Image 1 (cartoon, rainbow, N blue to C red):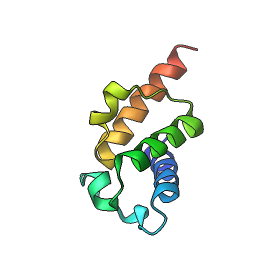
Image 2: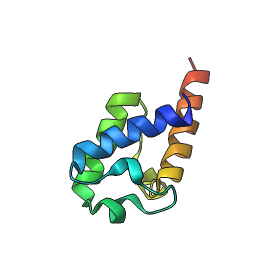
Image 3: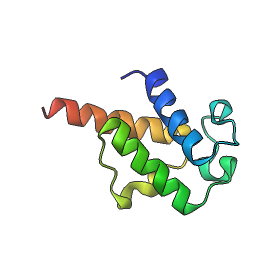
Length: 87
């Protein structure tokens, strides 16, 4: 999956939890929750949506790594690569 495809999945998920925000204009290094003004419950729903869309398990212990668009993309890319190489 390319970075553009990952970004599209991420933005689609963010639009579900913050429909009033323009997630497509997020700066790659800005904290997502602050930029979109979403609480922890919305963020959890967003991560559940990513799991459903990508089939990637995201353990709670990793949530702290998923603060920006860049960090989220890197994390998902690594998890997707690990998943595809194990099948």
